[in-house]
Image 1 (cartoon, rainbow, N blue to C red):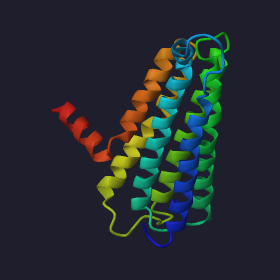
Image 2 (tube, rainbow, N blue to C red):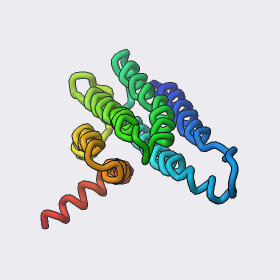
Image 3 (tube, rainbow, N blue to C red):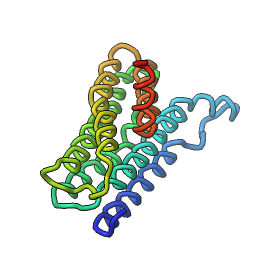
Length: 205
């Protein structure tokens, strides 16, 4: 991390930390009547929503860190794009809370649409931020960065908006399929780009 981007990453780390911490606040202590074990089990949508969103935000933080190991300089546009990305991150606890209260109920579809739309926005901004920084026109990457590594990141990120749009589309067909695909995507983006490239090469052989 260069001196020029130190404040960007430090501020971003703080926002990620707050957002991921706020997720747990939506899991409430049961206050109803009846056996505690049954009340805890009835809260399964909250646990599922928390787990998926915790994974998503954690992996977004990992990817943000990866980007800024390559980005050595900043300008006003990069700062604005980073703030837009953080806007998406701080919003995540809200659709997570909505999904937790509506999953399995009659209002499940609008909750899924809100939830998946948030990640479509984040995936789009992630791509925009990286492609802006990696553009030869703006020259924001470190001088010693490996061009192959830049290409790998660009190829991996290119899948994001399209596949998260697929998650959004699945909201109308199957909640479980939509959430399962979203979780699989999070795991995919957790993989280092060189691992994804290696698996793709092995698949061709």
